[in-house]
View 1 (cartoon, one colour):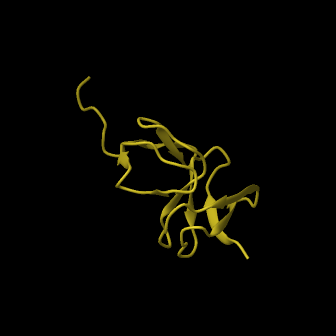
View 2 (tube, rainbow, N blue to C red):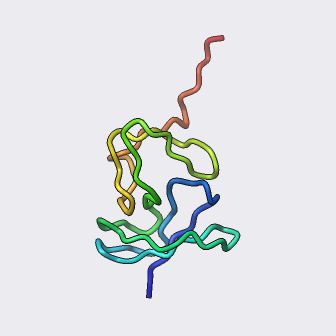
Length: 99
């Protein structure tokens, strides 16, 4: 049986795993609306509640979650890899106060 992950939107680059995942585990991914996105093989361990890459991303790629950009990759990320602070820089608080 495959482990599971939820993606907010079909266009997202990442999904959140709903249980701990070990390297080599197959992860079945669906959107919150139930749209099947396929099965991905985890390339490393991913803890419950953390993100898995749904596709390969190059360094500097805008990471999409919730259908919008949440950060930039700081290095290349392989499909099935753990996506977290070790490879993504958040843009959440990067807003300009200068007009």
